[in-house]
Length: 101
Image 1 (tube, rainbow, N blue to C red):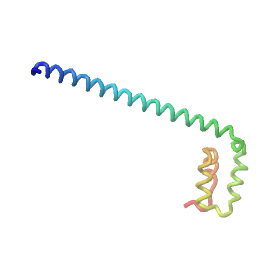
Image 2 (image 1 turned 90 degrees about the horizontal axis):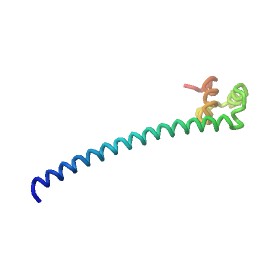
Image 3 (image 1 turned 60 degrees about the vertical axis):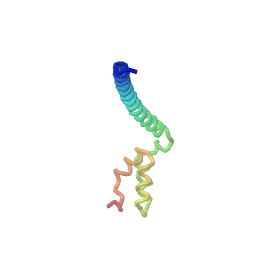
Image 4 (image 1 turned 30 degrees about the horizontal axis):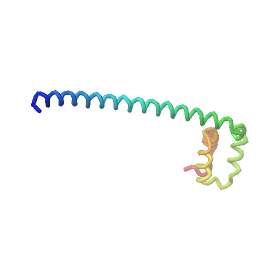
């Protein structure tokens, strides 16, 4: 092989490496866009599923009364209640737990 051929090969490989890096970066951006889109759709799906659940039809006043019935008002109870659904968290946050620090 001569040096001219090697330079041509190097130039060709350099160009192909850059094209591959560009294609990879573009693919990564597309995956990130799809991940964000999927996360949004999953959130919407979860919200619709939660709203359709029978427990979602409990009026806020009754749900709050159930929370109030926990006389011990333990930190565990507060955390558990706030993790059931977004609706429950909102109701729980709008009442005063006696042991909140």
